Image (tube, rainbow, N blue to C red; front, side, top):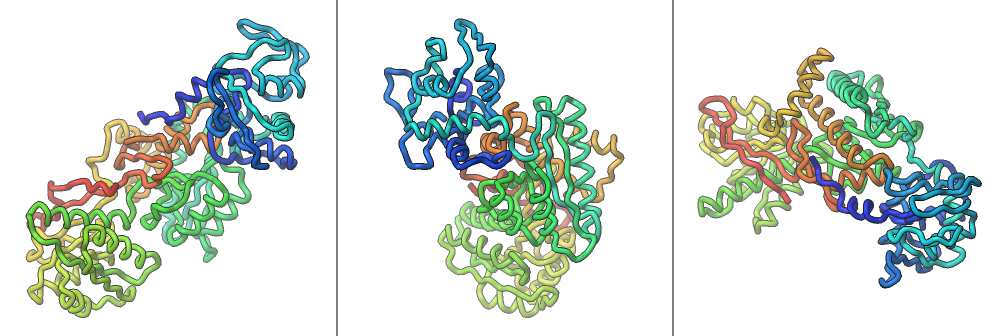
Length: 529
């Protein structure tokens, strides 16, 4: 079970009638706010004045006040002001001004009005003059800021994030359902639907049902990213999961960060770890696999007390592959390796003789190859023909089973990297995955894509559960940032924190046993952190 967010203990402790404590970050408004209400929302959610005036808070009268940004209202009272569990009260305006008054365990008082709400926030007393709970912070702020905060309290109940209602959490994805990638896209959709049905059949998430909205692409030449852009603009969605939009990774990252909508587990090999606050990656991409291979070879040299090899990086001129080569080169440079020969070639115009001559002349002793499986075999055949035997490195998904067609002279000199291996499977994760397949009669033709969709659904589910009933996008992000070594069930464990959005933090490296035509039992995890 993942660790709860670090602030969870604070959230439980700071209970009180009008605790104004911040969860952190902006919260999407439901409906237009006036300028005063927008300023009040900033105080409610961030504990700070947009007019740059000082706002302070004190838990006990004997303690020095602190910045209200440390102790602001959303944390105790939630995005909609209705409180969290039984520990903090509902502060919606119609509740506060109820003419029937309020009865608590040890005190009773009449209805609030604007003046008595302000007095409660500043002095910690109710309309009858009774002291509020000691855990209720006492705030100091300018009269203008107090007026703005009260204006927002009259609207706070309308502030659920998009895609949320009292009974539904609407989650979106964008998948190819026609064209060349339709089999993978449809398989992913079916897995997500099956997992959501499983969650809903067992009570949902804190009483809310998961609802899937699918943006489809592939029927024509319209750029797939347009569908994502249109769907996010058109549909009220709480979050996105397992999007599959190859070639538009940067655009998708820009979109979710601009719209402040969390994206969990995009299905891609080219995502960047510097992808902004709202995107959470669940599997190592090609960049991480390339870095892991570089690390593996350098560690092998250290263990053998040998000099580090001179690296060559061979890659096709495709979108994003220049950046992959740069990332791998930078990883080598971190270890003081200055001689890295980067050799690009035109896609679909691979000349094995030419690249072998170039790399051999550069003195390359370890070759990181990022091309296709066919080209990998051609590279090995030409190198063997010339009696040249460098160590060959490749992401497993690029080399595929073609690696077993390599000349036997490369025995002991080929390493592949993988985002996940069967050793990552847990019994619980495998059992549920198998049950979904049996119940829905899925096939395993697109197992890689199915596992990506399943893992994204699992991580979303556990993060929603940990976020609690007073759900918001900010609470979901906080919950994700609190995941530590969580195992989705079929992939490597993921950990996130406020500065980390690549969950696995590394990749598997496997030695290839050419003699027996299999991956060797010698596999090891390379932690890139």
